Image (cartoon, rainbow, N blue to C red; front, side, top):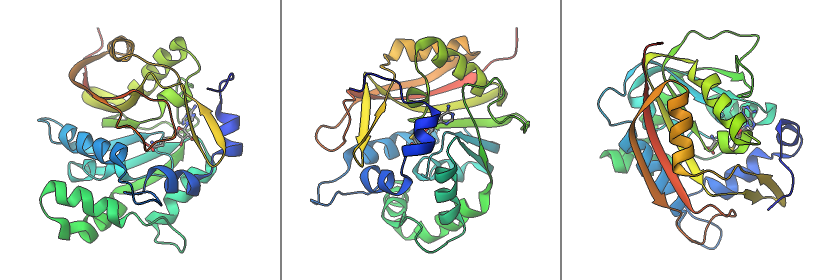
Length: 263
Ligand code: SAH
């Protein structure tokens, strides 16, 4: 595990989106081993975005990175999506796929997998087009800022989704709790938070770069979510499938919470 916290400056300097996608977002690795970590997360996202009430007009993806897998089931439930991330190269990589530019990552196998889970593998091209149309903006954000999209003020959304971001972005529990309050303010009262978080992970690595991770327990996450004004509606821990991720995570927490009216 790295001794030091890898902050936004490190992400901006060293996070290589193409290598990240190669490592974590292919359905199988170069040895042909299935990426069970990704598949498990895709199934969890489908389950969460199938829950009653998980629909509306607007969805904000916080810390989207260069990835779209977290939006594949979500885009069936929301009309407009805004994606946010700190680093320029990750937002750029996402734009490449949205605009079908040369060299964009091939998401087709992952999209096919989700379509199969949803009942019709043949709908992959339709889903890709749907998602491309629904992502309206890709903006810079910093979850440690009171207004993460400063100087832009976004109208509160019906839902926010955040996958594998806060544990990477926060150096300690106090920062984690305040980051949840910061991103929680992006949701309307009555709206939802959908999260996928690794538990008890201290680092992840790819492309010879190591990134720090805040070591979280389920209770700590749930308390922080509640402290940000949400009621936890769904919470499920699954063990990290062994073998195929370059990280020391022990489990993955999938969580849905609903924001209550301000007291
Ligand atoms: N959501 C994607 C990417 C996770 S990688 C996925 O599920 O694969 C972690 C992401 O957090 C990176 O894209 C990084 O740029 C972003 N990040 C790190 N610190 C951040 C901060 N302070 N504010 C917003 N995003 C941050």
